[in-house]
Length: 153
Picture 1: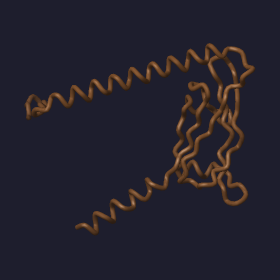
Picture 2: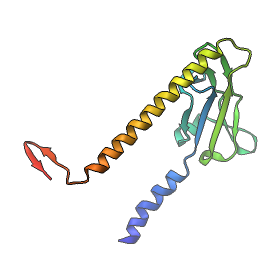
Picture 3: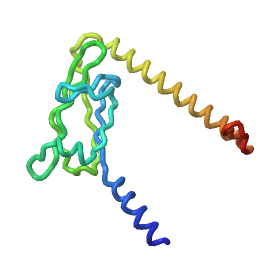
Picture 4: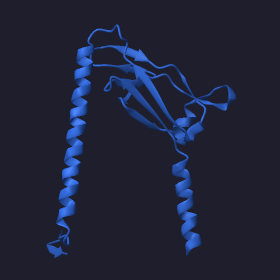
């Protein structure tokens, strides 16, 4: 029994432990991130390094993979790009790519306001989650489930 359980758990654990990620961050946060002229998300944006994604990545000299260039576009219209980034820890590494807003681009206040609104929204979500978790832990007693007109405790 234990042997068969290990045969199921260990491969799943090994596979999940081998998957890395790339996190694309913008400074300030909240820029629209794109790669190869395709929008992929809002910074910070995390990309799991799955075997399918790795097929699209080129291998550089010394067997390092290469993450493509990413472009960040802020609400003000400011644009900056990252260079092609070597991923020398392979597909199980966790990489962070920072894209900084050009200091001479106009509209910095607008971009800082967007970042502040995103932070406020995240704080409200964390607070709501904490309240929900507290309410769930206070209930403590048996939970009532209603299925097809039957009430089950």
